[in-house]
Image (cartoon, rainbow, N blue to C red; front, side, top):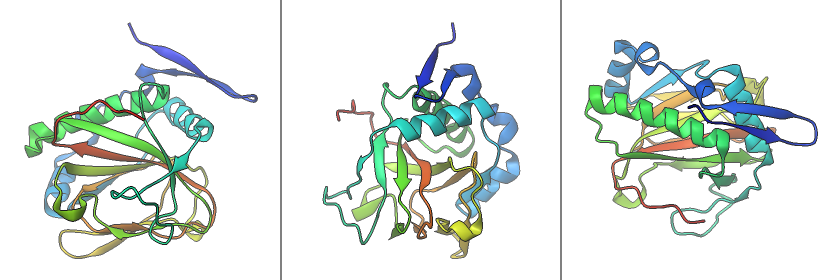
Length: 220
């Protein structure tokens, strides 16, 4: 039986259903996508989820009480990153459905690219106007637990003039600037250097990682 739940605020009530987050990844991910991911290290997928799923994620990201993001060392450095985050746990209804779909995508990468992914994790992120995240890799200090990274974007009506682009240097050492459009999923090798350009208005997204290490129960 499919689970569903209501996400509420004072103005809006949305019923989020697991079926709304179903994606036929075998249909979405072509051979060309797999070749590009293997050879260049990144791909972009647009219009990934249903409108109902997108709206549920938008609402949930707005309701969540964000806490200040920290670097791996646990020390916040605003000159490096300026986002506020909330990890997706079982208490995040729409976020949990999103992660289930990402796990199905990871299974495809394991099958077709021998990626060795064992689990996924994600957090909602909010960049206030005037902030970004400077150049970095998602596997700092020689670590290699993260295999594939992904970012899902939540802002409607975003334009290039709003800033906040994801800038990625691919495996061929070419720079790509990707606009954070709603319902867009950017997927890339976790070892690639990338940054978030300064956003000129509040920017919402979901940062996602597909990992090769053993799942450890999350404790907030």
